[in-house]
Length: 381
Image (tube, rainbow, N blue to C red; front, top):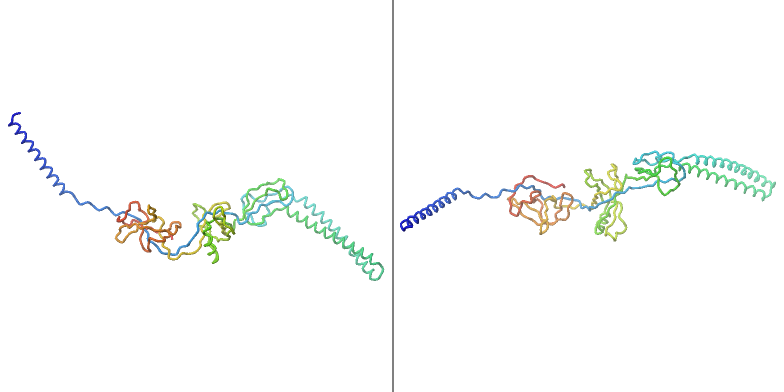
């Protein structure tokens, strides 16, 4: 390429570079003029609750096992054949209701025999007594010897004893006949019948005829750590302690009862003390053998700080809550809980009455975040 052509080409390249730089500068200037200021992050919607100061009960929570107030295994007291079963399995029965009947005919015959023996012995007794009275009159007139009178009197006393034994035999035979009808000794519910009609039964056999459980009232057994024993005994001395029992996942109202028994020794293998509460159970909500959640109320705690348990979170430094300041900004507050009862948490320190805490929406929060209240929330007091 010749020199003039090289100079011409170099000038053309320089012109293109200058034009490109000028265009880039003007484009950047236009974009800078069109740019808008960055927006602040939007307020985060949260649900909040107010820290309440109120009187709350102090309770001990445990798992309890329901047992019948009384349980009776019915057994026959005489041998014989069952001729009647007057109930259905699982039926509720009343005290004194006739449940089983054993063939009474052998016992009726025995009763008639003993009654006949009693009549015979009573007649002999009356005869000897009459003879004894006559001999007593003859003795007063010296017509008989004292030895003869003593012999007659002995015979009269013997006849009286025989008559008395015959009367006892009649009473026993009548009692045996009564035992042929087996009655319920309490109000309750019968279980499975072990021996059906037509079976032979023996007196005081190993297997019972049926088991009756009394469920009104009813007991709930449970155990608590031995560290709670002193507090329980302290408050028991002031009056009866209220207990509440509710089956798991039940939508019914908890059954109300009272603590009725504290074991006389701590179980050294588990470190617990056994307790028992009695419940009227009028609606038969509690049933023998079932497990229930039981709550034992010790006393009332006044001026306690209460927040919904959802407002308290757990982090690396322990438990905390987000507090909403008056300017709607967030402050992270380390808190210490006394205990949690259901949907409520009892705060020992870290919060003050009247402050507002976040209940829902904590995942998007950080200290300094601004919030808007989406829906007020309150705990179940």
